[in-house]
Length: 512
Ligand SMILES: Cc1cc2nc3c(=O)[nH]c(=O)nc-3n(C[C@H](O)[C@H](O)[C@H](O)COP(=O)(O)OP(=O)(O)OC[C@H]3O[C@@H](n4cnc5c(N)ncnc54)[C@H](O)[C@@H]3O)c2cc1C
View 1 (cartoon, rainbow, N blue to C red):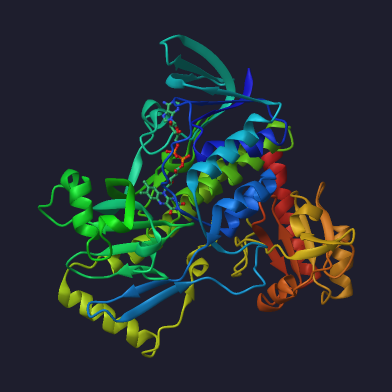
View 2: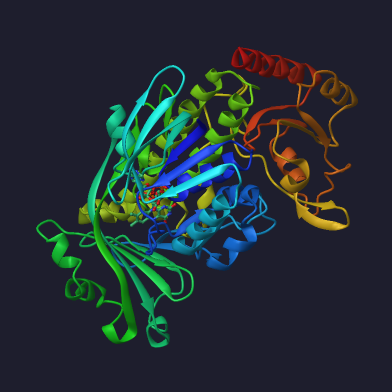
């Protein structure tokens, strides 16, 4: 009997397997294919994902396949700049460049190799899940090998990371909610030569043109991507032929400038699972949600799912928390995914406006809103906080957001904070905290929680990232969860004591 079985060894499954296997949990991971899909789909990720890769210990291996994301400039009906999305300047809030482009196949290979190196994980490739049943104790899986041989395996919990057309979701009858986006687009990946590169924009571009909205993305090295909307009456299959695609690309390039790597037509959807858990089975990644690619968040969402579920499953399997903790997974992730998808849709609606009159009104409105001068807005501003689940009952903008990760001094070297503080529950106190709060902090501590004071011991930071965070959030203490989300912030001993009471109640209920 395995503790956890993961169906699907794409990015979501590989990250979930790495995080659970890293806790020594006995696991099975299967995928119907034997190799990583060799063409890129996701091409952007953010610092939260890099922090998860840091936890896996693979940052040095994946960094060679990454580059900073260039600004994305939005151009309106008359070719004028109407919006600009950028990245923030250092020092970075989470210890990594907040916005990156990457090459998916080699990064997936690194993630897989890491999982395969973990002693508690069994990887079964070329095995398709065909059937799944569950009772109160465990889940039974039926797996079919490529030669048709069928085997059975049992696991206490199953995570379905089997992608957009999830077999598990179908077998379990778990419905998707339609968030109302359905558009046909052509996605084209191109490898460009020197003469071609000289013709292309040096930033990423959203062409918000009613006659054919289109996105141009600068990917690592000489890889460039176009996402081109398909007009009513056009044949998506014809546009995906080399002839059809070159015709669409002729505005920028000729076949002498580049090689087509992949072109495929898609319907961009916005879907989220109604329920993320059925008994012992959880949905994660594309199996639980799909979103249009306008902010490059699809894979990031799956990694967030894996990070959220893996610490909770680990705690339950070790007997540190009761099964009820696992209900907070869907509660937290569904709310976050729904809100972020709504924001992504709003960007898609700006880019994809087809009515010329409305498009001009959009341009005028956006320019008016910034006083006629477009100012770059960091992409990360679009990330919502967690609003439901394992959080203190408190109204504060920092609650449910990611706690920063500064670089700190450790053993004569500069390292990222998580390397030193670990990943359990943490209480972080600012040096500005008054003496009573410091006393309260140590008196009210929760079992297993570590206490750290900024400027002392392991928390001597290099760039003032944490100091600024406390100042901006007008607080002097933060309770931080194992996945780095802020449970609560406080400025007085009374507030902190109240929050500890809430956390204990959560933990007691959860341990029951
Ligand atoms: C054109 C395009 C552009 C995108 N751009 C971005 C972007 O810029 N940034 C971003 O973050 N995301 C982007 N995405 C989304 C991203 O690619 C997906 O969100 C991500 O790959 C999902 O990962 P996953 O592991 O959940 O699913 P998948 O990558 O689909 O993996 C699912 C795995 O499950 C396996 N499987 C399926 N059924 C079974 C079964 N019955 N038994 C065993 N194994 C099974 C499959 O073989 C596969 O390996 C894009 C997607 C597309 C299509």
